[in-house]
Figure 1: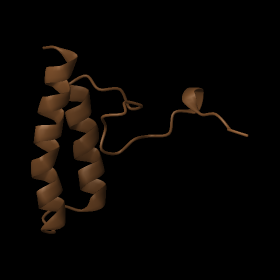
Figure 2: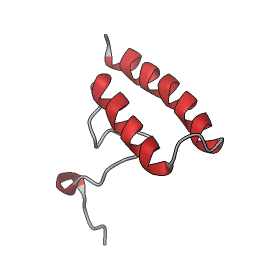
Figure 3: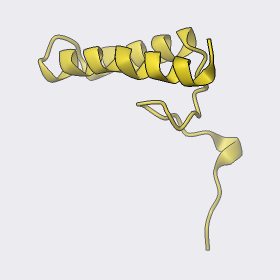
Length: 65
């Protein structure tokens, strides 16, 4: 699977879970866990710009003056 296809599949899956979150079927904590599981399934890094819930990556953080 190409990286582009992986991102598309990830985003498509998260649309469903976002709807569930909005409807109150799952909590924010459950949504965060689902996001992590789906990202792992499709090979997205925790620091990926395509992630719905981006984790702060210490190695890429910078202070701009």
